[in-house]
Each structure stands twice: as C-alpha cells, then as structure tokens.
Amino acid sequence: MIKIDNLIKVYDTGSIQVEALKKINLDIDKGEFVAIMGPSGSGKSTFMNILGCLDRPSGGKYRLDGEKIEELNDVQLAAIRNKKIGFVFQSFNLLPRMSALKNVELPMMYAGISPKIRAERAIAALERVGLGDRMHHKSNELSGGQRQRVAIARSLVNDPAIILADEPTGNLDTKSGNEIMGIFQELNEEGSTVILVTHEADIAAYGKRIVSFRDGEIVEDRLVEQRTIISLNTRV
Ligand code: ADP
Ligand code: MG
Image (cartoon, rainbow, N blue to C red; front, side, top):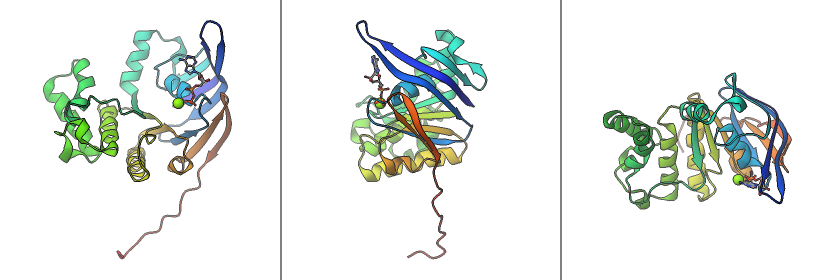
C-alpha cells in the first residue's frame, strides 16, 4: 500500500538547512498497525506529514496504492488526502463551543456534503468511537479522552483506508490513553491501516510493528510479539 524509497526532507530556513529525513526506506502493507517511535526532533512528524500528503518530500519516491505521490500537483495531492487519509493529532483541534456532532460535521460542510448525509455520517462515526450518547455536548464539556474520540470520529467520516495519528495520547492520562489505543486497535481489526507516532513504549506496544527513528533515519524496524491472549470463561 505504502512504498517509500530514499525519501529525503530538507527544511530550508534561509540561513540554515535542516535534514529532517535522510534517505528513509519503508514499506507498509494494507492492514498493518505501525507505531513510530523516536526522540523529539527525530523526524517523526515530518514523516507523518509526508505520508498523509500534507507536505512534500525534497527527494526520493513515495508510492501510495501505486500512485506516484511526489509527481502530483497540489490539487491531486489534496484529492488523495481527502479520499484515503484520516488524521488525528495530539491537540484535538476541536472548536470548544461547538457540539461534538458539529465538530465532526464541519469538514464535510466545507466539502459541500448535504446536511442529511453529513449528520448521518457524523452520528455513525461518533457511535463507532463510543460517543453516541455525548454527541450534543460541547467539546469543552468533554474530558480529554472524549475529545480525542471526537477527533478520531472526525477523521473517520470519509472512511479512510489509512489512519495517521501523531502523538494521539500525548495530552491524555494513562487510562484515557489506553482507551484511545483500544479504539485504534478496533479500527485496525476492522481493516484500517493504522500508523501512529508515540514516544511511549507502552503505547507503541499496541502496534503490531514498531519503527524507530533517530536523527532522520530508521534505526530499528521490528514486529511486536503478540501478547498471549487468555480467554476467561468465568468472570472474577
Ligand atoms: P519529531 O516529530 O520527531 O519531534 P519533526 O519532524 O517535528 O520531529 O522535526 C524534525 C527536524 O526538522 C527537527 O530538527 C525540526 O526542528 C525540523 N523542522 C520540523 N519542521 C520544520 C519546519 N517547518 N521548518 C524548519 N525546520 C523544521
Ligand atoms: Mg512531532
């Protein structure tokens, strides 16, 4: 699904040039659940922004479902992004005085989707993340974990094949963080490809594969040992 060859990103800020990504090679198959780890400044967000077609590489190749991403113009890039990618960020990016439902509907409003379909899709997405009973609450009346669930619901409305999340649990306590990871796990089990950035090992362990970045390079790429599943026939 994703094939990346010798991907380079250089930020040119006039006086200095920052080599944020140095010849990254990575393939990701449909249905994978990949956690990207690495210290601050190692290029994780730069990489995610390129994966999500929000930014362009300075060099190298990026194939997404066979499409030559680096050769597309801005309009084509935006079309791929809207069709295939759902984004979740650390800061939930919700409008505080607007209801959960309206927050999820907003991007569809900009996309010119009719009110009826907008509402249907938003309600379905909120139900999918377990917030069916909270959709009329304003986002500033929700807990951090609930706000992130609204943001996840918003990322799901176009039914994206790939969900990208950059430090989605970074602003959450451990319990809410684990709940959010449970949602990503479910989405992955339902067939979505999930790629998320974290600097916490416990969070990364939800992934099936962990890719570690350092100084703009991949220093480790390994499969996570699947945790033993113990089936409980009786409840304690
Ligand atoms: P991470 O997400 O792993 O913390 P980033 O991808 O944000 O790392 O940053 C990688 C490197 O690129 C850092 O040295 C950072 O300062 C630099 N960088 C990131 N974004 C920009 C930008 N827009 N302009 C210039 N330098 C940037
Ligand atoms: Mg970052």
